[in-house]
Image 1 (tube, rainbow, N blue to C red):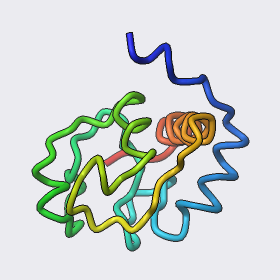
Image 2 (cartoon, rainbow, N blue to C red):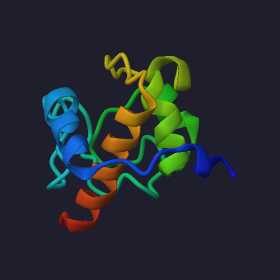
Image 3 (tube, rainbow, N blue to C red):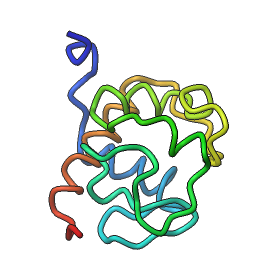
Image 4 (tube, helix red, strand yellow):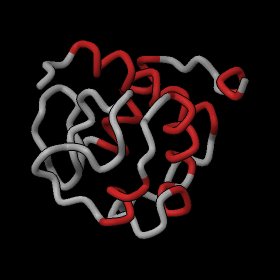
Length: 115
């Protein structure tokens, strides 16, 4: 199973990565959108599915459901995973950094208000 290849991740390290690399464009603690869509509830959601956010056609048409596995692959190189995405983030090449970020997203998305 592919999930075994993904490290568990550390919440606090993920929080730091989120603040440094994601928070300028995304929130996770509310349903607000910034330059990017809210990441509240992202795990289990289909790509391009936040109401009111102007996604690229590529993101809407990808049809991926965000899971630990798909986020792990996507966060390595977003433009390779979804060619045509508007997201300018270059990605996180280090597996442990992606795992830390995913751990933080998983925990925070459960705490945050849902729609």
